[in-house]
Image (cartoon, one colour):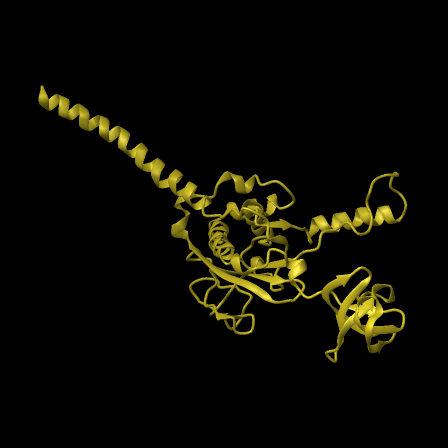
Length: 312
């Protein structure tokens, strides 16, 4: 009797255990990987995704990674995403129609409405050799980024299904490269699969994302970019969350002759004369219509804003 009870218990365990193990090995890993995409408590600024010039994805028979990166940006909520791709081109067409006077009244489409990109995010891969065992493609030949910012020996190997990628963020106003991270993934990381939310992501980039989710090397690249983006967000503590104010002020150009004074309202005496066409650099201090500026010789003083315009 005891033998029959033991056999029944063993058979029951054998039928149940595989289902539990399989659920943990796929579902739990998938949830953990998707949870790696960090979420910010507030937006740091606006960002545009820019394709690298080398178009490395064509060698891997994939579309541009722009759509993949946009998904990461949207999921993380760290930046306001501004479109400078196909969506922007469509918007420009609408603006051209408006400028031609063909839209109905009250459509509210015109100049001065677009959000500027505070930062530009560039997704790339790197290459160190030709590797006869696979196909290595990359855009940073020689293995260096940003004039010696760091050596990167990586790439994409189609036969081994491995990918090493790099993400860089550049400040639009200063052109400074403010963050750079590397990401790595391999075929062994694919046991969890890519979540359905990737292929169903709304907007113009959905088709590009689905092309990545439908191939092993595409999924490996997604994982590598998740790795790099996670590291990137962890570096964002060093990035200004008010880049418009914290960067140097936009230069101004004199449109009328006048004087630079020691104090606002034309007080304190004249520092120097300022001529038409002269470029001056605001310090950020203002008093009514009076702006504190400096010239290229290091002189600092106050000039009436009615005498100049923002340099273009």
